[in-house]
Length: 58
Image 1 (tube, rainbow, N blue to C red):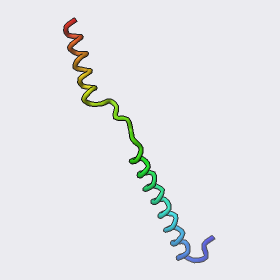
Image 2 (cartoon, one colour; image 1 turned 90 degrees about the horizontal axis):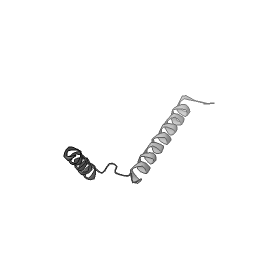
Image 3 (tube, rainbow, N blue to C red; image 1 turned 60 degrees about the horizontal axis):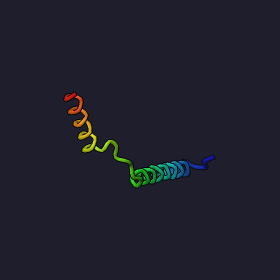
C-alpha cells in the first residue's frame, strides 16, 4: 500500500488536512444558519410575570 515511510506520512497529513477542512466547513455552515431565539428572554419573562399576577389575584 505504502512504498515508503515518507509516503505514509504524506498520506496521513493529507487525510488529516482534509478532516480539518471538513470540520471548518461544517462550523462555518453552522454559524451561517439562523437559529430561532426561543424562548425570547424578555417576552418569556414578561409572560411568566403576567401569569403569576393572574394566578395570585384569582
